[in-house]
Amino acid sequence: MPNRTVFFVSDGTGITAETFGKAILAQFELRTRQVRLPFVDSVDKAHQAVREINHTGELEGNKPIVFTTLVNMEVLKVLQDGCKGLLLDMFGTFVHPLENELGIKSHHRVGRFSDASRSEEYHRRIDAINFSLSHDDGQSHKDLEAAEVILIGVSRSGKTPTSLYLAMQYGIKAANYPLIPEDFERHQLPAALAPYRKKLFGLSIQPERLAEIRQERRPNSRYASLENCRHEVAEAEAMMRRAGVRWLSTTHKSIEEIATTILQELRLPG
Image 1 (cartoon, one colour):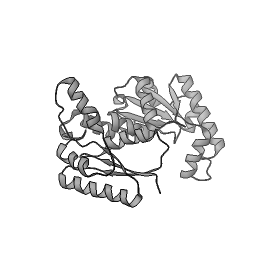
Image 2 (tube, helix red, strand yellow):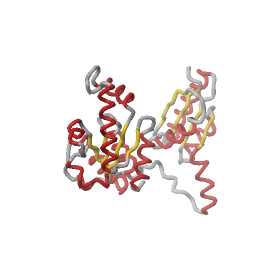
Image 3 (cartoon, helix red, strand yellow):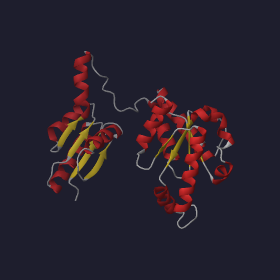
Image 4 (cartoon, helix red, strand yellow):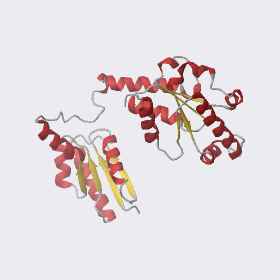
């Protein structure tokens, strides 16, 4: 059994509540069962959420922890009055002091995705996602000049998830291009990347970890062998050093940490 059940309750997608809540919970040695309750945007849905939270507490004998980003005060009041868990009103913690300091009322707008169809930021993210998908793993050289960053590195070093994260989270048009054995034989970057050297950023990885990842994809192959992984990583890092390409190791870094480093190094809008 987990130590506690944690609920993330929101009148939107629940992404904000979950992100904030997980960041706070990471400060504790705690095993949790996590439940997201999105789109709690009416009194009826709030009562349903209260029943689920309270029932969980009764079954487990512990007060559930409830992170909420509800902005509808009527809906929030249902949780405040009926919830028997530890209720942490994340918007209330920050919004009300800001209202007092600024002397103005907040919009009490539901979620970051409200009115998305009219949001320039939203359309920028969609365009960036489409760009990253069409320029994944070097499958297209077309419009590379439109890329804001081009990630390079050996296969399975984290290029694709990082590209998509940059696109989805920040609207960054990120292409990625694999460094392959033929490149190492020529001892130079692929010709298609030569005009865009200032946009390049390299990802590397410890050979032992790379071998583990590749074994899951192609077990007992030369591609996944530790010897080959050591060779490819060494060649890729040497190539990036010769070309003056900035790079980092993804071995012990999360996608969020990798993306943040890239934004800082290349001074991209975050």
